[in-house]
Length: 522
Image (cartoon, rainbow, N blue to C red; front, top):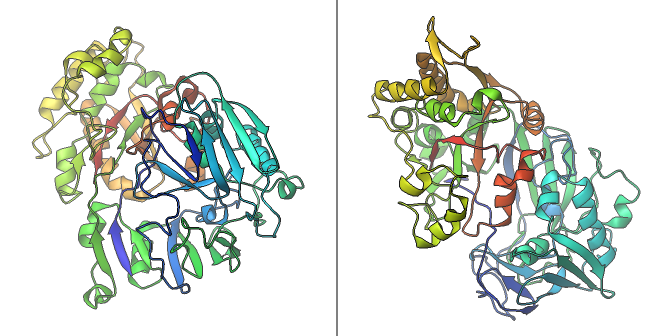
């Protein structure tokens, strides 16, 4: 068994490369680590034995085995059952190698991309993956899949079949140089299978896949087990050699995080990714740890950790004044929280790309000013004159100085204290709900609620189950939630979904809702 502190990140990006590509791989930056003829990725063991069972933990519940639609909560691990046109390498910022596709072709201006499929690519029932399957998958995901697909593939103007095994995606005018790689991430679904079923509905019928694993058994909402496909069509391809080694992968669902930790210590599952500082510091004790049966490993990295914080739903009138949002940030005492709740393990987030060379530092330089100047008057003036710094305290729990500044800002915004409560000109109190779906956050949110109370703000904490939380976020039925904007060394197409105008009206997790109070990153 092993426990590791890991912060995941997504990968997508912009680049200045201007090379045409026609071969088995493509890189956002022009250079590929693995050249034609490579035998396996360096981080894999080509001689790794196959076999054994691994048990994992998942949280909440699930009610569908289709991970591509908005309806329902999909089961953990379903990605292992579907293959995509290309697959990324884990030791490059943004490079993709052909999997279902045999070759990828794109011109220097990246105005289109074409994929030639491998003749041996197969679904689990033995039927071949075809260009028709690729085209059907693309159109179905864009029209019936999760809303982010519409944004992700929004710049694709035309899809056409160029031959028995070749498909071409042409792009709308504009500079979106990562689109060829994004299309390489497209999973390939069976048109014949889904033509007899309703794609948009939730389903507990295991769908026809193509990946290294298929669903062996499941107990809806409680567990799911995947078994390695013995005759997996891609097993000997270099990007798959040394991977997919376990015979079975099982996910057991837990509704309580503390119960999950105790189950791990009792040997009920084999690997746990820990992201709660208190647990990392105090939870891993007992006979199994003393006997060396449980090992902790902290993995240092320079991957962007993204931004985590309390996000305001700026559709709510109470949050539409930026001065109110800035004022409320003074009630979150990070220094006290880090010392008393996080065991000093966290660093305050000051950038969406913290922990990497992409993090913002100082005032805008010449290149940044060239981008910002046209937007003067549309972005806050302090962007040009003041380095962003979140409110700080001495860690004692005394936020008096911050409270004074908060009340000053609230006063400017038209809020006054009457009877110990902040009210606006209509006499309406400043109150809102903080919605979470993980009890772990309660101990972090409650001191924040207490400090808000000192300002005269009424904040109510509400913890709901995962399904209700997802539905309320999708419907924008919340005041404030905790959000993590994941980032990578290759920022690109996902930024449009985070910050673009279309993201403000597309039902999706609240990862693009205006401003947030930065919390921390481990």
